[in-house]
Image 1 (tube, rainbow, N blue to C red):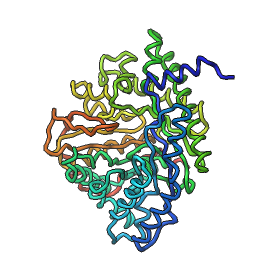
Image 2: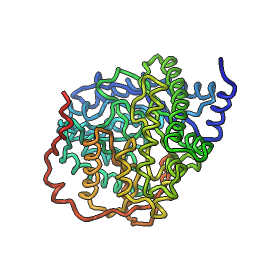
Image 3: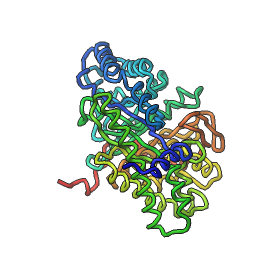
Length: 452
């Protein structure tokens, strides 16, 4: 029997505490579209995406209207295009990006992820061509997101790819400097990338996934903060329990939406990703959760410990609520997308070095960080290598999404609008790692990779 107090609590979460379904993402395999003729491959890709996802936006609109649950984004993820491009590596690979853009415009989705390459152990011809094409592909499209997985616990870190990605990030910013360097905001470099992640820019449809699948990403930092506010003075283990119970409720709502979307679209349900993905709106901040636990400012001593507890409690609550929790599931710390982190970085309480420490215990990594536009490419590569090493050694997903603010320096600001937010240019240690980065090769996998 439905409990009226539970119903009212959920309504209040949606109306007052910014609870939402951040994304319903349809994953689509493009393996059947491989063709040595790139034009034929693009035609197959367009037909398959528009055929499978024809009803994605209308169905999401119906569910939102019937249940009163906000669904913020409708997205598509596809098989890493580097695999598809392997059949035609000498062609103009950006044709694939333009095909994805055309499909996105036709369907009305917010983003398409999967202009990607998985190169943790080495390159195929298609992977190499795709990485080199990323800056132009992102500059010439609005809805396409790119990602490259450069490392894993099992394979180690492809340092040649790390070097290439430093250049790709810088060039992506350069080619879109008239649009606040938005190209770099749609590009993420990963280690241990999950194959079922519904969140951009790192979403792609893994080769072990079904031909088509529905993955849902839920977000509710405001709900967790409000629950902690009501708790008052209590012990740390009591705080953890409150977060677990709150995460359970949030995940159940995501499960409901995922099952409904799966049924109406006649597509298998994949996973619910319970990630506390913040927004620039007041009351929807992961940083403010950490401050509610007892920090004067996010970035203070104790920030990594509070974030570790939050991430762990969110995951534990989520797995109790659904048998299919996946993706990233935990706490995100994207600087420009989080009102509390924007303020903390402006005030100097939050530095890149502190953020790097926090990435050892959060769900992702160094995310949406604006850096000076004159940052050398080898420094960007060095930051990527450091973050990949944290992921590799700790058997977790880590990522880097840096935005070099071309023509701007520390203290200036970039503004993207919408969920991407805005933020100050943060200082970077520019002592050169150039010699290390130029060595190339593969950083060996750690001993804990030998688990067979």
